[in-house]
Amino acid sequence: MQRYFILLFFLATGAGLTSCTTVIDAKLDTGPIQLSVDGTLTDQPGQQTIRLTQTAAYFDSSTPTPATSATVTVVDNVGKTYPFSDPDNDGYYVWQPTGKDTLGHIGRTYQLTIAYQGDTYKASSKMNPVPPVDSLIFVKRKLNPLSKTEGYRAEFYAVDIPNEVDYYRIRFFRNGELQSEPNNIITSQDGAFRGASTVTDGLTFIVPIRRSINPDSLYALNDVVKVEVQSLTLDAFDFWQLLRTQITNGGLFATPSVNVPTNISNTNANGRKATGFFITSAVRSRTATVNDANIRVRED
Image 1 (tube, rainbow, N blue to C red):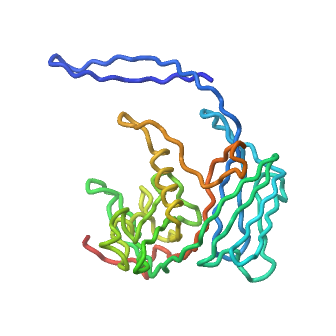
Image 2: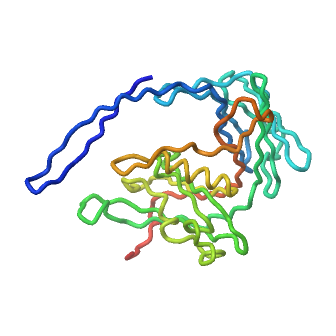
Image 3: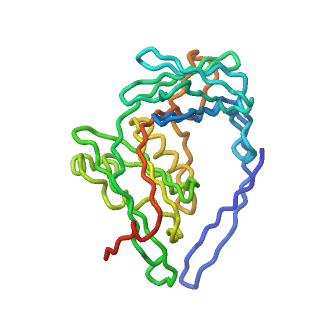
């Protein structure tokens, strides 16, 4: 595989600014195909899905090849088994509830087992508690101080669970559409940024986290906004933080790429490795419309 990278060096001199171009011919060998796991199970009603695909070459931007004909099961620490099936043979393995029970329960630990092409993979995750979203409000603002364009900034309120270190992921939806740009990967430790636990434990989420649920264009009147707070384990928190770092890693000061960690392990130490992550999250959410009932007048 060959790709060409253009590396620009800008050399400032007393006479002015000059530039040169160096062409680097990068030959990248294609590594072995691995199983990739995308699985987040929650305590919400309805079906749960785990997606299995095959890895591809670094510069291959095509849709990943589904990993079909696998056997996928989840077992919790109270002995209940949840079988997953792939009814459409497309790599989306689904568990369907038979009654009102949910798969996820706060406090339980879940073990995922995948049998695929002669290998057996395992991962485990505990479902930690999550606080409720108390409210969701909007404040009218300009797009920026010099802009004449106005919109509405959203802000949600939640209180961190006290007396322990908690890890969260925040997601938000605009008119039913998940906002999934790289900078929309939002994580929080104790309602703040990493390392602030001794200050924010048990308190309301800090302002930058509360206001992190806004698109670049702000919201418009009558938009429907939904915010979710998901509980995470420490290793899942690390996964999301490093994933965001890697997919936003670019520009003149980019750092060398590194592998994003995985909690999927092959029971055979000499077997093929896997990528991806298995996560269990309790989820609490709130939905509000940008209308007079939810708009506040604020100076900040």
